[in-house]
Length: 266
Image (tube, rainbow, N blue to C red; front, side, top):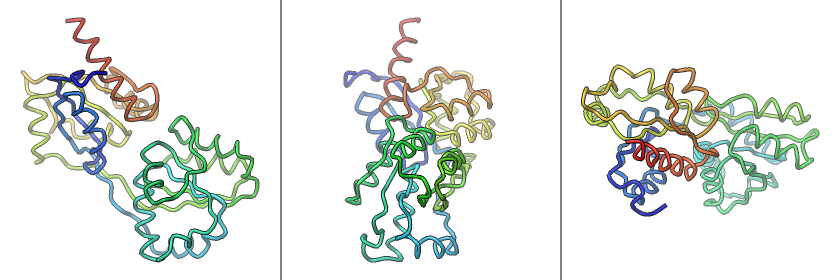
């Protein structure tokens, strides 16, 4: 892709604001005009009672699994609030889903010992099972309020002893008075990118405040992965393009190809 692949194109991002920097930069580098439409927000949500159960037992866990960079961020905020030494993690091994999650781990000078090529919970479960280390192993899965149960279920089927620790929650962000929503209604866009099921559902739930003006551009809708696509289908959002794998780079590539194809049809 050239630095002008998206020149003159207007792309809408639907992730929580603090998660947009990398994707925003990738699109801007290709010449796109980027509008951030924060359909969801992610906030810390952790109970002290849960921490009191988990933290004293850290030395007894064999694995800790993170399914998002948000989980890494909020888990370690609480970890460093309680402990003043990273060695308090003990000899626990770290598993994660996705490049963004891995980068968050590496930024703490920690090693990721299990990361599947495909960024899904199913793939992480399979990768952990493939290590041959799960029989009677203790695994801590760090979650949000909307995490799917498939990872825990598959690990338990492999005879692991699994505990979960919720450290954040994802909520719909009310856009009724948000300037970005007014901008979207008035001008529309060439493409809108959905990187999570939560954002797709929030888009549908707030359809009234996101209704495009008569002359606004109607965007192509793109999905980053199978779970997001499933939510979009159920919600009635047409899927115009899908990333070949659940990653930001793949989503950008899919958007460029879809918009180029659209241009050729005109």
